[in-house]
Amino acid sequence: MLYRSHQSYCHRLQHDMYFLTSNSRLNEQVVDKIILQLNRVYPQILTNTEAEKFRNPKASLHTRLSDLIKHLQKRGERHCQEFYRALQINAEQLYNDLPSRKILKTTDSAEIDTDKEKCMLNDRGPVFFLACFSAAAGFALFWYCCNSDAKVIGRSRRILGFSPIIIGRHVRNICMLYLEDISRN
Image (cartoon, rainbow, N blue to C red):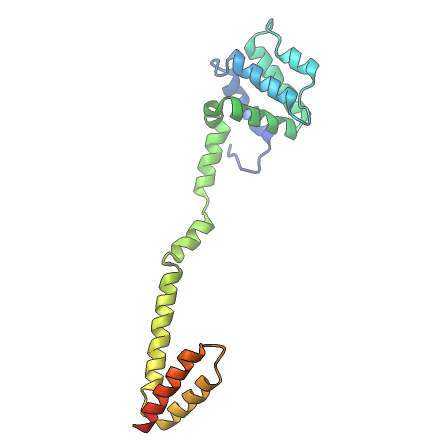
C-alpha cells in the first residue's frame, strides 16, 4: 500500500504498530518518556489515570505499548500525531526507521520539485540577464547613433532631450554633445 503525505496519522500508526511492538525496538525508559510527554502536553493527550495504566510495570512492555497505540487510535488524529511527535523527540533514530516514514520519503522524492525545476531553467541568474540586456541595448544605441542619416540623429536628440528621468543629466548632456558633434561632421 502506498502512503501519501496526506494520509492520516491514525492510519500510519496502525501500519507502524507491528514495527514498534516487535523485537523490543522500544525499551522501558523510552516508552515511559513518551507516555509522560503525552501526559504533560497541552492539551493533555493522556490523563493521569491513563498514563499510570500504560506505565504499569506489572504488564509486559509489548502489551502496554500495544494498548497505548490502540487507545490513541480510538481517541483520534491529534492524539496519534502527538504520539509521533513524542516518538521523534525521544527516539529519533527509530522514528526515522519507521516503515511509513521510509515510504513517505521515497514517494516525496519521486515527485517533481517545481521550485528546483524553475531554478534549473533559469540557472544563469540576474547578472547574466543584465549583461545580455546591456550588450543588446548598447549595440542598438551604437547602431542607431552611428547611422549617417541626419533624420536619425535629430530623432535621437529629441528623445534624449526629453529623458531627464530615464538617464541622469550628466549622461544626457554628454550624449547631446556627442550627437551635435556627429551632426556637424
